[in-house]
Image 1 (cartoon, rainbow, N blue to C red):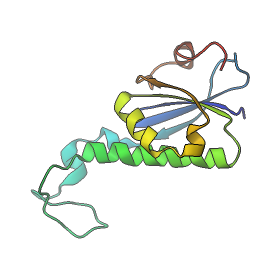
Image 2 (tube, rainbow, N blue to C red; image 1 turned 135 degrees about the vertical axis):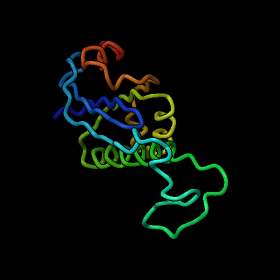
Image 3 (tube, rainbow, N blue to C red; image 1 turned 60 degrees about the horizontal axis):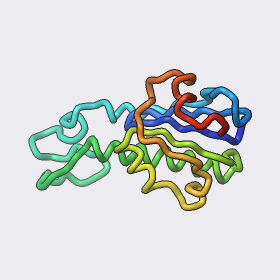
Length: 144
């Protein structure tokens, strides 16, 4: 596998591509899904009016503003950053390009380690998760 990685992500899906050489087309090597991001707010948080349905916690009244959609976005950003960090530690990433929906990119930036951040060659704040590899490649420099 190449050590030039391109990650294309939004709150519910991340596609990981590699390029064999700096001018090569992209090859999709992995897709991560976070289906909870597609659920409605009510499906994520409450089983009774004002009650948290998280089975791992004690039940609390839901006072104040709680944004379950944002919490799921954060969870997926953490999952993706952990996966990327593991790849970095294993020596599989030498250069990283990140293309992500604006809100997701902001959360992902907060979670990426300083060592991984040093490998980021460029970030593009766009949601291209549904684009073809050829369309995604056009958004990147000619030589990666």
